[in-house]
Length: 433
Image 1 (cartoon, rainbow, N blue to C red):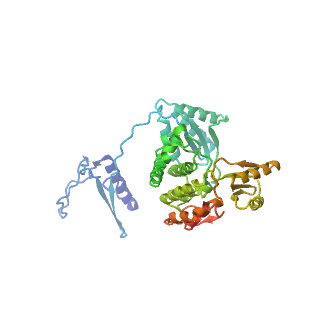
Image 2 (image 1 turned 135 degrees about the vertical axis):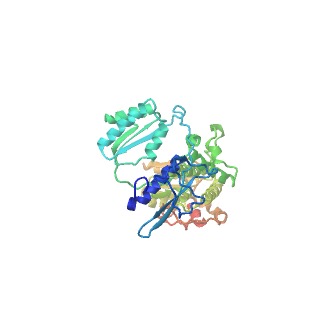
Image 3 (image 1 turned 30 degrees about the vertical axis):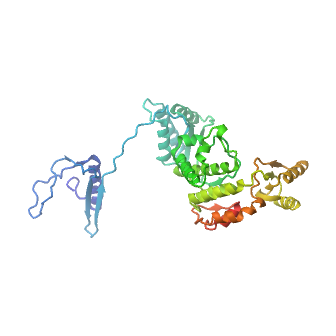
């Protein structure tokens, strides 16, 4: 009040602002027009500042201040403010150290405003004191509001980004740039893969350059190593002649770890799915991502699933075919006890599993009729009746699972429907097996 008078209903916020500024500058302002203390007020232990003075240190603790607001209508409030934590400025990244591509997103409320923004970014990127390119991309993506009119470029340097933006402004077609208007948000689904897509070197760049991804894989590594000597981290970074990614058991564990790492990374960017599904060996990571299984339980299922399936190595294989499930059932009946319908992937897309000789005969018959087929790589007859002998052991080792309700909708590729999560007990995973 001594500065600007009584602001009525705004008096409290004025005091709050003044106090916040005093904390920020670490200075105590003088109380204007104060000269003589009122004789009837006991000022013992109190002092009214009559000149600007530094705010003393508080033995390493944050400085504190109180703001009173006693309203005429009877509303009394007292706020305690603490100075903001001190942030140590990090050294800016050296632009030449990291040449990975980054996404630079720009947006505005109108086409004209977007053009003006892009021009200003070109000037910034080409300026003599440009900020580190990756820092600029981060701020543009994470610290700015995203409007309907959008432009985005992928580049590995400030100069390349400036070139791409200028090409966009000239409406030239660019492989690493896009210009347009955002549509209404569509639903996004995370689909987790089963066996097959693993390859030597997968995830290696993320492990080397992204801490969030690496820490997630390292957590999986610690959990798997509690069960066996298989280290997904070691396998993902192994040189070719030492790699065991072509082994069914190792590949299953590595794929699980990669997918956990990717989901963790995407979550750190604020990307969450509207629904989740997992195919075959991908269902464990899917259940974890949906919140139905803890990471420890998902690792446990993956380990024992891969361990028991590995026992069948060399006893059969799998065949993909472009036929309807009803046709597949006829083939299964014709080869009763040696061939099973392993998966129904679509109206005319199925997978058979079982004896190599029987599947070879079926493949030849399909070939003669001009029907699509493919004998899949691998020597394990997944999802076949040959796994029946492992039922009791599998149910026993997974008896301690504690499934819980999902946090995200989870579609089961065992039942073909939506699951609540709590039913993902040992019996469910045996059906998945």
